[in-house]
Image (cartoon, rainbow over all chains, first blue to last red; front, side, top):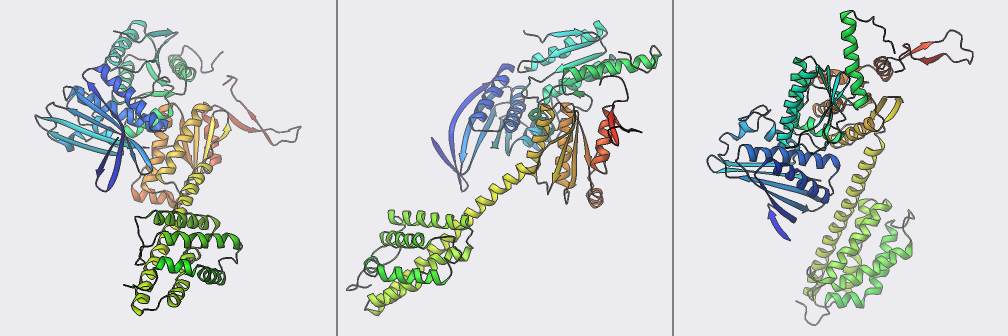
Length: 144
Length: 133
Length: 301
């Protein structure tokens, strides 16, 4: 068990595992894994569906625009609440204009452009770091 | 690669999605349905998603596309059986599927399609406006 | 520092009986028992436990040793006392005076039991500090308990106040009463959508006659509910929007782009119409009823 201090709140990571995102099959596996972790954390059906959907959106971005990468799934515990944290990392081309990437309707692929912005709305916490040419890291947390 | 089976039911086509949708599977379904609508002159398409645990923007876009394409081919698409948790999530995600008709279950969806076929028949003057059973 | 005088802990032990007597006397005089919410014997036990725990938590100079086991058990005991007081309905002052009224007896005991003036002054200062600290802790524990109670009641109210009622085969109504905040709206929304599935209802009427105000956020939540219901294949009708709410919404720039009716009756009539049903008057009802339900079209819908 690992205890980290972020700011003043101490957060415990109960379990963690990593999934490779290299193909469409992996995106399906991401959904199943995230679902299991959310169930273990006692999420309601609606909360499970929200985080699985958010995971599906970002995993597809990692695959399509980030040339594949990894997902770290962690189950968190904090005073009085439980959550799931997902960290997606890729070494792809990166995003030059993050603001724009988060805008609904913006897409560099062929999608509806709801991926990142939609995932942000489905999560309680959302962080994105990206460096052109180096890659992108997206972290989301959903609390129970 | 697996494909999702498409059944013909009278003037309508029925698709029941029972697996966790893979992106390639979704794209294949879009193509298959388009071909089948054209081949069978179907007037309606029922897509039963009651087994789906999530609908993300990709699957949402597929549903929108199918509805748009079928409209061009003179067929009405009805998405049936969406689960409450999925519906809440889709709304939060920002997808309204405005171009797609919806129904609670296959039976109701079928009624919608039959009503449309009937209304067209009345317009053409093939029938009077009293439905006969 | 006092050398030939006893430590504060020993002093407490020597004078325990007098301290307890005086303390309980003060508590009774202040009305701790009057309401009958707590028995005299229970109060006496709490006082005795408190003194003995306090002795274990003191350093020789009379200050509190916060790392001691005695201090931990003293705090947990005080926490328990405050919790039970909060649940029994004591006021915050009544709860805190359990500790604060110990000040006087302690000062008297110090006065009697110490000789050196500097020792006296030092003990009184330490005692004053410790009573204040424990008193404040009591209030905190009391407030925490009250917050827990309020949180629980809020949850219960949220569950109780969102009944989904069936008006007709395929028609549900959700009479919302009270303010809709975002957490409650989520409960309401999930309840309604779940009922739509369970009862295969095609039409759901959300009646907001009992909602005093609607802000932008609430309006958005309502719209989301309507959108989610549509995705499932059901239609929503909103009824009972008060005139001032309608005005506020226009001022806020919120457009409720949904079907709305003035009251539940109108909404129900619309629902029946959509299901191709109607309520008609019967000219001579043998059973004495004014009207009966008929299906105007012989479609077996």
